[in-house]
Structures are given as C-alpha cells and as structure tokens.
Image 1 (cartoon, rainbow over the protein chains, first blue to last red):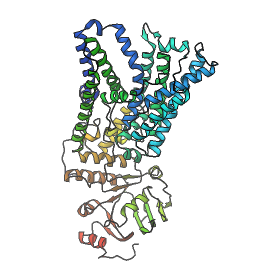
Image 2 (image 1 turned 120 degrees about the vertical axis):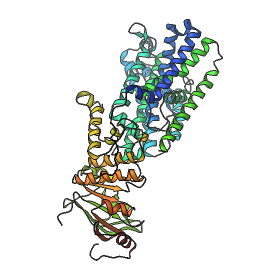
Image 3 (image 1 turned 30 degrees about the vertical axis):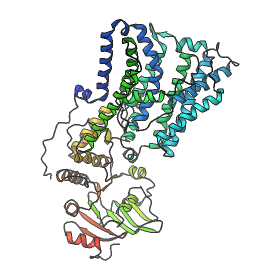
Image 4 (image 1 turned 180 degrees about the vertical axis):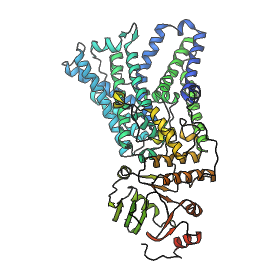
Length: 342
Length: 254
C-alpha cells in the first residue's frame, strides 16, 4: 500500500504554555504589564491610585466597545473607518428621539424613554453597518472606500439633523446610572457595561459558529464560500455588528458626557484600529481575539496616563504608539511570509 | 456493466459563441477511480464544473444512481453526496485541521449553548482525529493552524475534507499539482483508501504516470467530447497521449 514510512506522530493537544507562547496577545499583554510596572515603580502613589485607575477605565470604555466591533471586522480582513462618525450619528438620533418623546427636553425623562433612546442608538448604528456591509459584500466595493464614505456621510447626516450644534439635554436618569453611577461597590457602571459587551463579543468570536465563520472568511474567502458558508450574508452581519456596537458606544458617550460631542470623535476609528491591531488581530484577516483587543486598547491609554504622571511630554504618546503599531504589523507580516513559503 | 453511480449524457455547454462541451459523456461506478484527461482546452474544467454544480449545462442529462438530477449549485451537489477537491489549496490557513474539516458543517454543543451557536470543539477534534486516522492522513498536531503544515499535509486535509463528506462521488481537480514526490504519494494513498470505501473518484490530472498508477479506468476528452476510454491496466502512455492529441480514435464512445 504505502511506500512512505513515517513514524505516525502523536496527534496530541499542544500544551497550554505552548499555545500561549504562540499567541500574539500574550506578548502584547506582557508589554502592557511591563508598562504598568515601569510607571508604577517610578511613581507608585499615582499609578496604583484608585481614582486614576477608575478614570482610565471610564475613558477607555467607549473606545473598547468600538474596538470589539472593529475586531470582528478586521478578522474578516476588512476595515471600518466609519465607527466614530456612526457613534456621533447614533448619539444624536438617540438624544433627539428622547427629547421628542419628552416634549422637547428629556432631562427629567424616565426609564422608558432612556430604554427607547438606547434602542434607537443601536438601531441607527446597525443601519449604517448594514449600508457598509451591503456595499462591501454585495457591491464588492473595497471596505476602505465604503467606510471612508460613511465616515464622512454619517457625520454630515448628524450635523444636518442638528444644524451643526450639539444636543445637550440628556435624561438625568441616564447620566446618573450609566453615565456616572457605580455598581458592585464602586466600579463605574460604564466599565461594567463595557466589560459585559466585551465578554459577549469574546464569547461570540471564540466559541460560536458565527465566530468560526468570521475567521474562515478572513483566512480564505474562496475556501469559505466553497464550503457553503454564505459569505455575503456573514460579512453584512459583521458590519451590522460593528455599526450596532458603535451605536451603543454613542449611547454610552451620551450618558457620560451628557452632550452629543459632535467634534470629538474624528480619530476614534484610528484609535480603535490601532488598539485592535496592537492586540494581535491581523490586518490580513483570519487571526485575532477580543481579549487581545482589550489589551491593545489599554496600551495607548496607559502610555498617555503614564507620560502625564512621570512628566514626559504627552505628545510622545502617539509617537510611541506608532512605533509599537508598525512593528506589530511588521512582525505579523514576516510571520506570514515565513509560513507561506513552506 | 451495471448502472454507473454517476453518469453524464451528451452534455453541451456554450460560453457565448465558444462551445466548451459538445455532447460530452462520462461515467463513474462506485469504488472506482476514473481519470478524466485531455489537453488544455479539451473542456475538462467545464465538464467538472457541470458535474459538481458550479455551472449548469445547456443540454444533456446527469444521472445519479440511474435517476436524473439537476445540479443547480454546489450546495445541491454536496447534499447529494458529491464533493469536489479544488486544485488550489482551498483551506483556511489560519484555522486548525479539525476546524477546516468541519468548516460549514460545524458540530454545535447540546442544549441551550448549542442553540446560541456555541461549537463543540472537543467533539469535532475527536472525530477529526478519527477521520484523519481512517484516511491515513498523518499530522503532527490537529490544533495548529493549517498554514503551518507542509504543502502535502495541507492538501491531504483538503482532500480529506471533501472525501469525509462525500457519500457518492469525489471530483479531484489536479489534487497533486503543487506537491513533491513524497507528498504526492500520500495524496494518492488517500485516493485509494477512498475508492476502497466504495466511493466513486474522478481524478483530473496532467501527470500520465500518476493517472496510470492510481486509476481503474481513463476517459479522454478532446474538443468537448469523449474520444476514448481505457482500462488503466491495458493502456499505455502512448495510447493516452495519442487519444488526447487526436492521433488515436476509438469508435462508439461519444
């Protein structure tokens, strides 16, 4: 029968340590730990201070929710530049509809109005995601171009809705609960909310069929198609997910800042992409994890905080992030090249 | 000859004014390896596309177990037990072999978690090890990304993925084209094992010695028509080449 005599190698599971060592997210996790340790040693009272830690977590919550959606998109080897604008748009539709339900000023509105506002935000985001996904998957326009278009269009639409000025009336119920409240003995509600969203995202990507198909499409779209996966439908769903999460982030931002912050999200897309890629998600698709993204999102945030505290000019932060980001992609690229030559 | 497992009768396919198939016929029985050979442009690829559901013929009949079938899409073909292995490595390199084997056919967990879409990775891995063992596919590990395996192992997984799900017929479009000698032998072993399991194997190859070594029969396409059929044990290299170029013509085969 066979003329090839190979000693049948044991088909064992790799040990946990080996698998961890192979994961990009482990290395970037160590970088984060090292950063915190270095800043912590230089100035322990500031870094390991509860208030500072709380602020850091709150400030990162909104970006984290955006980045969870971005992780799914980048794993499919796509990109979504529109998330920041969609966030603003969703915050505005949400605030406007809450105002409309309360006769013009929603400051004293109840839970019913707040819940509807949340749903409007998510639905607005998902609608933009659907437009993105449809144009990318069905009309086959490159994601970079489609989402560059919706990046501009969503912000333009938001400004049209309010004539370019922010909506500043937000229900106190919302601001005092999600915006500034704490739960479980002092943990900010924003953080718990973001952590819950992240946990669901991590579960969805790592353990479900939806996640498996997301990886497969990013890894080899043709192969995925041939195994009977409906690639078009799945891609649309991934962009709807990213849009919906951007809508949710818009709602969180609205709760925390109690205004629609029209002008402060023009670089959210880049921050979310940077965090996702820093966390080990490959821009070439097929590889990545939500856990990695959590770590990746905190690196720029920790750098900023750390630089402020130890007195380094904060303008060094983007330069430091840029170096780490470009080297991360460079390593990923070399790894792939080495693999494909086998 | 008994009823063939899969039979094509006088398939015709036009692309605009180009006639890719001009009444091509073909048959394969269960537990048989049939090679389909022909020069470039003979219509092999179009023929396979028609038989695997990727394209629909303009006229002609396709019969499975003697009953006429209509293959409107590859999904329909797959549901009838007809699988195709493509020439290019159609695997997801970032997923492990077990995930690739079960891609599009994932096993979910039982109960509420399964309803939510959660996968039973353990069960898939266990069954994958079993299937790879049955087909004689040796891998160092079933949980490394497939891209880190050698070309031969990758192709063995791609072949295994199709044959595991095929209950009737497997089409293989140059499954060994990109492989070295040892790796090629491995894939050929898998082909023999599949045949021994009672599945009809249709092999497309340009490698004549390979065709003669692994096939039971050989059918030759030329200019969109079947021009010759051989028993592999009785055919010589010269016969095959002659039939492909038109130097040798058999009667009554079209």
